[in-house]
Image (tube, rainbow, N blue to C red; front, side, top):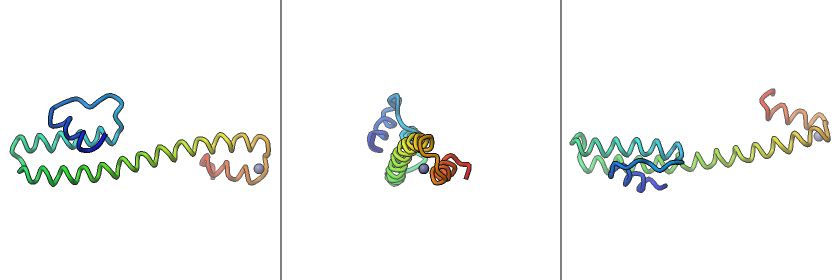
Length: 106
Ligand SMILES: [Zn+2]
């Protein structure tokens, strides 16, 4: 989902769709707070737009970070599986060293 779409959900007082990511859920909470602050007259429309743009920018960075972490985690798991196989077949000191570093034993 884009930040604009999330703001639309918040403006219409809709629930977020199931299966949304952590960054989408956080963005929705922020969007709802900005919309409520504007409706309650705590901030001007201009302030609401400024805060909305800032939130959308931050959301973009968070989404990218989430994707990078997810991709890295998948790659890490693949490497651990292959390394475990390599260590069983090879068992040399280099395999052992790499395995100890990757599984946190140093
Ligand atoms: Zn080896």
